[in-house]
Length: 167
Image 1: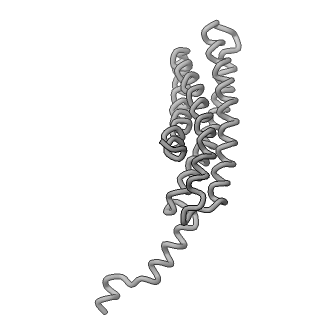
Image 2: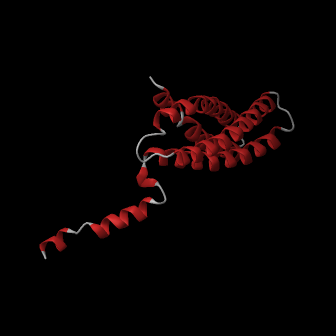
Image 3: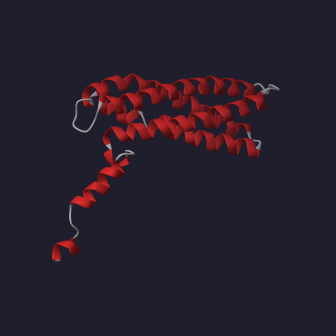
């Protein structure tokens, strides 16, 4: 398994895990259920660990694909910058989650405050996760790039439709 393949294997969990964790944390807050909140905290820690692995494999993946046709260093650099921001937020979320776990398990009076802080940090993480996922997808999926609509419309103007061919 090369670095690009390994990167593809590990890079989805930080995004999906953070989104699921946020939903579970909100459910735990609404239900006032510390076990559900703790489940979210564990998901956040695991997402941060996978975020670390994603960052560790990203450079090798970049080296493999940066010279492919249609992939430029600028696109990869944009993804890398967004991934670095996500990683920082995920690490902060993991630390907050560890405090949340500890506070819930020891019935500390600040447990509720920590859960609200974790919710805010998780919302920020979900924003950066979406940005990172989109920029990562743009590396290989040209159809989702913002400039792909212009390319598609030019192609439509150049190539005749079946009805135009009949005329």
